[in-house]
Length: 209
Image (cartoon, rainbow, N blue to C red; front, side):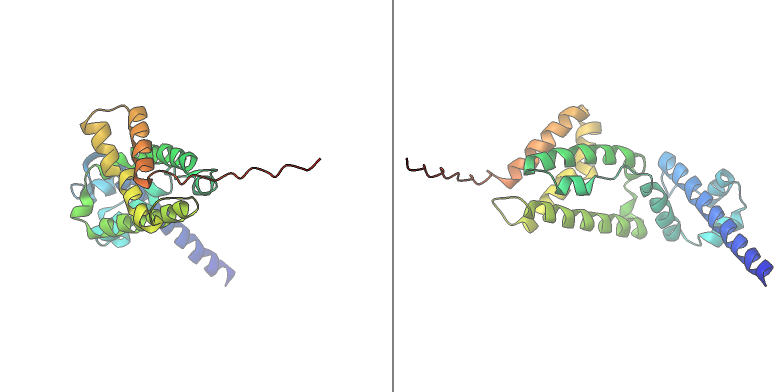
C-alpha cells in the first residue's frame, strides 16, 4: 500500500515538474514572439517533451497563458507594498511607488509589448484582476494621507499613470531616460492629488513664571 502511494506521489510530482517546464518554455517563447504566434510544436521542442504532452497539460491557449503569467509573475520584482503603505508621507510613498513600478514595467515589457490582452481573453482577465488589486492598494494608500479629493476617485488615475502603457510610451516611443520618466511620473502623481492641506501647528502655552 505504501509503495502504491509513493508511486502516485512520484507520478504527480513528475507531472507537476513537466507542467512547470512547459510553462517556462512557453513564457520564454512568448517573450520573443508573443503568445499568439508561438506554436505548441515550438513549445514542445523548447520544453523537451512531445506535442501530445503539451496538449495534455494545456488543452487550449487560455490555460497555457494563465500558467505562463503565473510563472512570469512569480519571478517579478513586485512593489514593496508594506513599505509603501508605511511611508511617512505621500511624497515618500509616491517615490517608492514610481521606483518599484519602473522596475516592474521594465521586467514585464517583453510580454506586455505584444498587447495580446486584446485578443486573448484569459490574459485580459489576468491583467484586469491585477489592475483591480493595484487600484485597491492605491486607494488604501491615499486614504492614509490628507488629500484634496476622494481617494477612491484618485486611485484609478494613479493606477493609469503607473501602468505599463504610459511607461512604455515615454521610455520607448519618446525615448526619454527612465530617470526622467520617474521624475515626471512623480510630479504627475502629486499634481493629481492637489495641494496638501496645511497642518496647523498651535503654539504651546507659555508657562507662567
